[in-house]
Length: 404
Image 1 (cartoon, rainbow, N blue to C red):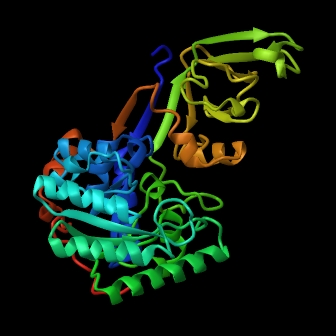
Image 2 (image 1 turned 90 degrees about the horizontal axis):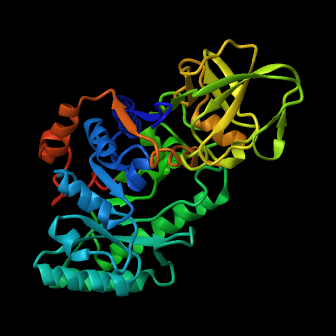
């Protein structure tokens, strides 16, 4: 692409982030959630780096993502978090992919697929404890548990996990977290009394992993934390490192007079004679249009603000008297090591999430990797689970039945 634009992903940072989170949670296993193309960082590469860092599980949104991991040689346990009746359950079951079920009808559909392929389906039953998204509401939870136990008795299904998801874990002190935790405990108690013996119970996302040890149970599910991001106020702690840097190069520089209108609508007008630099990225490539006159970038060691309306493929920076030239590197965001903005700063300025920022940039600009060699990535993808210290995907150890 003109301007040599790229999103650089530090796989070493991803590996280190997962190692740090695994140490933080102690006996709980780590499921690295790599849905949505690894939060924009690359599905296969992010998964491999996370496994190298000690993740015992991988989580994905759609079955297609799980199948892509298996096709690449990933043997670690993989859970498809989004339950959908039209998903290719047969293929998932054949390849040992764990499936989520939040209602009895879908669970029975999965069981039928298991019978068709001649292999038990590995199920994680999802309770809706207050997110009001996927999962069985508490009033319907007994029905789901009973139906799953009935299918388990036929040999068509195995209840591997019970899980739920927190709505407000990134809002410190929000009462819904305690309420959901209590509801989840109730769901576990009911399932246990009915005879369910799940290997793993899981509730905590990245914010809960960082702030609520009482939500860790047997397994935690960081997603943004894998890539060094978090939706808590202020973002992730310093021991998690942002893995993505987006950079490009100026394609034109010009000197303009005071009072010069810049870009569509002249929403920026120069206050003095100044130098403008043209950045070959716009909202098509990922820069939100709301970044107009707001978002900072780094050029020649100095932060400049996008000046004027962000266009489809371009935006402009006002460099004042900084001696910039065409070809100078422009860093939109990165880990902040050299004074560049971070994705968290962009998110704070634009009133959104760091996840929203990083996932915008990788569809239309090249993505490159550093920090882990290609050989290391391949070795982790294809190694048996036992060689990584992870549990085999056909038998997951329960963490002593204790919450950690």
